[in-house]
Structure formats: C-alpha cells, structure tokens
Image 1 (tube, rainbow, N blue to C red):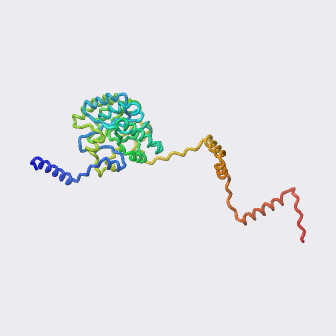
Image 2 (spheres, rainbow, N blue to C red):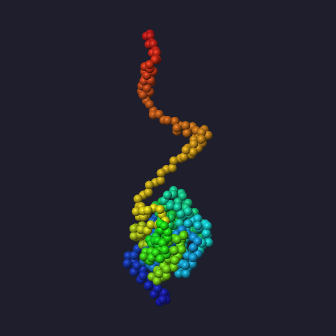
Image 3 (cartoon, rainbow, N blue to C red):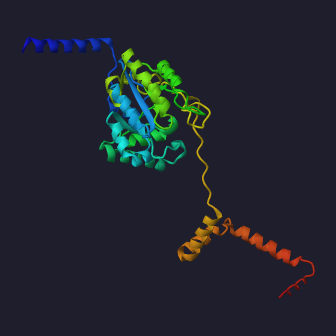
Length: 344
C-alpha cells in the first residue's frame, strides 16, 4: 500500500473516531424521514446550506427566475400546481434544469376540506403529470396554504412523497398586495440561517421576488451560504435522527397570508370537527322511490321498510285487548244491547 493511500485511510478512521466520540446523532436517510411520518421544516443547521423553494408555479416569469438562479449558480425546489404543469411543460423542464420539482396539488384547493379519495387524486394527478414531463417521479410534497393534517400526511406517504414545509417565510405575499422588493429582501436577511428552508412564490408576486433575489443571492454568497435543493439539503445537512419527530425540527412557520383563516396554524391544533353528512334532496328521494316501485324485489323491500313495526304482544295482552274492545262496543250510546242468551 502506498504511503499516500495509507494516509487517506488513517485520516478517514480518525474522523470516524472523532464523530463517534462526540456522540453526534446519525444522519437519517430519505426513507427514515419518510417513515417518521412528519413534515420537514428545516435542515440540521450544521452546514452552510439553504434551500430556496418556490410555490404555485410554473408562471410567466419562470424563464427570468431560472436565468437568475443560473447566473449565481443557485439551485432551488419548485412546488408545482398540476394544472399549470399540464399547460406549460416547457417551463417545467426549465425549472428541472436548475433544481427539483415537487407536488403542490392539481388545483390548489384546501385539502383539509376534501375527502381522502379526492386528496389522493389531487396529489396523484400532479405526480403523474410531472413524471411525464421530467421522467422522474416527484418525492416532495407541500400542501396548499401550508395547511396539513394526519390524513394528508398518510396519503402523501403512501405515494412515496415527503411533506416539506418551511421555517423562513420571505413575506412575498400579503392580505392586500405584495410588499416591495426591499421589504422582501429584508425579511430574507432577517430570517434565513444555515439549514433554512425558505418559502417564496412563483405567481403574480414574482416580479417583486425577482428583484429581492437580485439582492439576496449576492448576500448569500457574501455570507458563505450555498443555495441547494431540498433533497440536497436533506443529504448534506439533514436534521439529526434523534430530532426527527420532535419539536426541535418543527419550527413554527409563519402563516401563509394567502389563506383566509385568521388564526395561525400552531394555534389551530385542536382537531377539526367532521363535516356534516349531506342529506338527499327531495328530487333524489323521489328518484330512489320510483326506482323501488319499478323493481318488484326492491318494491317489496321498500314497503317492508316503510311499514310500521308493532311490538309483539303476548296472548294475555291480546285477550285483554279483545275484552276491552267488546266492552266498549257494548257500552256505546244508541246501540241496542244484545239479549242475554237463555240458559239451557
């Protein structure tokens, strides 16, 4: 063995001993994070990596955004809406050239209000549309408005997708209008740290976001941060395995201002009440009744269900009822009483 190769092996063994003696938690793989069954909000924060994410694309400014990212050698993750993916496959390919593509539902509904079958359809249709264009199945998912629930997590997990949230909101959306680019830039400077997952948008707010990125990307380079995709962040700087599923990885995200709900998500931890069952309309009941009347078998069953069920009576009760009815008939006014039968 050459001295150079021996030196490399000794250095590797020494680094392994240092890590083991420091008690550092092992880095989880993607499968371990997926099996944990919780959203990911950030990385470990031990390396100079930041994940920029863009929601609601692709949009009319996709080409400018991709060109800006390429100019600074930055990578990003794009959570796409399925309808836009189907309508603009070329823009999706452009974004795939500078990062990762994630699932953001097909029509951008509030998934919490939908039944499980419709939630699965929203995710699966977008996943298939992205795979047809990029030839890769997306493994990341972000719910619209940032509203999630255990049922949504389970469905995304069954489709092999990890739910990705954020811990740094750029503030590029507001109740009335998008704030100026200087304000967005200041939000990024104040909130972004090592291991952060940054929330931005790629719809009508992008002009201001683009101008803010023109200032923030040089700032990141000056501070030594490197813009990576979410899969790269989870590989290079994952949250420690012992923290997966604990509050240390679940930094409370700021409320997505696009949602109409007034309370922040962390204040809405109470379980939601189930939606009331819908009652059939009069037209629907009439249709079922006519269908029952047309079918002899269904008609007889329908009549049996509508026939009032009388409680069973004993022989003594039936005899007492008969005597009572007989006495009431004999005592009615204006009714001639029957002559007594002569004794034999």
